[in-house]
Length: 337
Image (tube, rainbow, N blue to C red):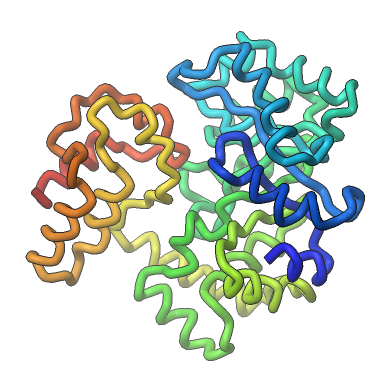
């Protein structure tokens, strides 16, 4: 995958302290095999909303990341996954000044932040930290006008402040690579042989002021598909934009739970409830025989908590980048038991 990407002219690689095994994989597949000046590498510093990472541990993350990756330095370093539930901790720990010190030492070349919250907080951060050089935002056609994500307004704020954007979740955790049937039908009518993922990626890549689009491909086949339309990128035509508008309307009419299975919600769940897996069963329930749905639910909850075990502590909702009403949704999912 790395070889194909570089051969096609790609340079931007994304990893993180919080992604298990990712930095070691980058070392083996990229750093040990290519000249350091032939690519750019991004990593991230995270502070968990539940305070499980203290200031000393947070500031030590880059040392571990550099050891794991062997990169020597990071071209891009992000204050990671800022939300309403954790942004104050980054201030309390002095992380913003810390990343500037890392830049002065040459351990990073550029610093920015990734953001999972409302436009009001983004405006506040952009005003308070004007030297942040880029912002990573969740942008995809399903969330462009989703008030729970605020993609459009957040993007417009970055434009207004002159901050280049790195796009994350362009296929919404894989949901738009295998969309609901009504969306598939809309794209299939075009009969152009393009993958569903290509529509999602070209939608975001057609926007201005972008530093990179993180497609999150996880197989050689996905890499080949991405390169088939991104290596010689052509923005969406007016007709293609209208096709996507139709897809957006179809999604708005669907009642599936918009979970991307990032698992941020499960890391601190005191009842060990596999929330994304339960939501996945609930979404697949439509049109499935009851016995199959119950069997799936039994499998995903075996040895773990069930939806009915939720004690409504709220830690999951504080950690959710999609701002889902998880407690309420788990109550609905109790019908699976």
